[in-house]
Amino acid sequence: MHPAGLFITFEGIDGAGKSTHIAALADAFRAAGRGLTLTREPGGTPLAEKLRDMVLNDAMDPLCEALLMFAARRDHLAQVIEPALARGDVVLCDRFTDATFAYQGSGRGFDLTVLRQLEQWVQARPDATGLRQPDLTVWFDLPPDVAAQRLAGARVPDRFEAQPVAFFQRVAEGYAQRLAEDPARFVRVPSDRSKEAVWHGVRAAFEQRGWLQPAQAPA
Ligand code: TYD
Image (cartoon, rainbow, N blue to C red):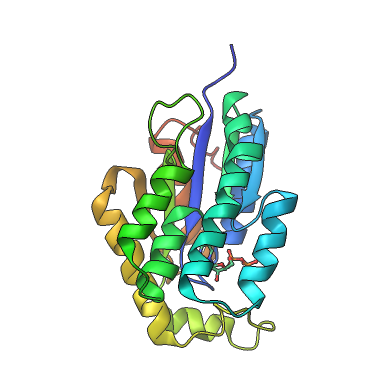
């Protein structure tokens, strides 16, 4: 018998510092001997990575943007996420559907009813037992003005990173709304603090659920 798979997603506005903590969690799960799948959205399969390149760089209307995000997600679920969960892996996924509600829904003002319909279609489980949703979503919550300072001059911005602070304010509100709709699925990690303090908050969420053993105190 292998352990039950775990589907963990990571969210937050650009500049919130997800990547470092995802890498640290991957190390912690590997050290614990768990099978691990590390992936991201949009992307995670050859087809979805092509869609990512288009959606981050080519001009398009909000419906097209939302459809491409969910098209990429469908391929990613079918090719990578569902098979990994079926073999008992821990799947760490950098962004998922909450990002679509936050960026396309709240940020761009796209119709949430349409997004909910797409969510129902795309996340239907292969065995028809309902919707595939993350077991836990870690939301790195950072004030948009702090994120903007962190991102300034860091690299050539994509279509989202180039947005003004007001856009990210709406995106953050979109995340807060998704948390309010399903609080048990989320852990909110305030991220306007040191990397160590943020990591402590992340790790604690996994220890509380019995998914990681408490870290050894340094000798
Ligand atoms: P990001 O995780 O920021 O990638 P990187 O760290 O390599 O820049 O994700 C890329 C962007 O895609 C980010 O700005 C958010 C956006 N995005 C959406 O707008 N909708 C979605 O559904 C997803 C998954 C991402």
